[in-house]
Image (tube, rainbow, N blue to C red; front, side, top):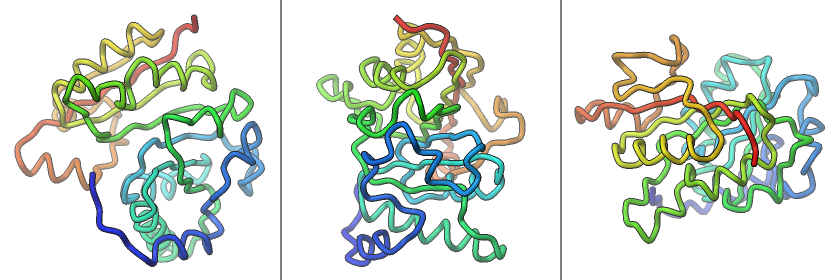
Length: 224
């Protein structure tokens, strides 16, 4: 998703205590960034404007979150959204770190010692052209990157509006050592997240347009 340049985003991010600009320094030791170091760590890949992660992290103070995106403007908006959510409820942001990084190189900042317990991927770029499909966040090559730091049993929660991306992703997961635990082609009629679905900005927009939301939970069963 393209977004206009926001000159305030970079200075605000650099001044924020819950933003990390040098994530390579914390590979294998992300728990040190959080006040409650014993909480499990969940990861969101492509956090966008932060509507999902701000609500998720606020609702689950017993879990630590790392939210990654590559665009300063997106992260700047996410930072403001997180601050608004927490401050309006008189709560300190103590279980969320925002990170600017290229997800294709994620193994430079996270490894098996970080004990990531869950990954969320919401409405990522579907990259519909064949020559671009390898850029998908669920593409087999990318799943292999995740598997380097995931333990057996870790789950990936995935949502999209795109039929082709969803069907291709089912194949990507199953051929890459994951078992599809649950899936639906209409999340709002068949809530596989058992009442814990947080509706993102994209999700609302697509639903209002009459597009059904596809979702799945994939569990890592084996590594090659």
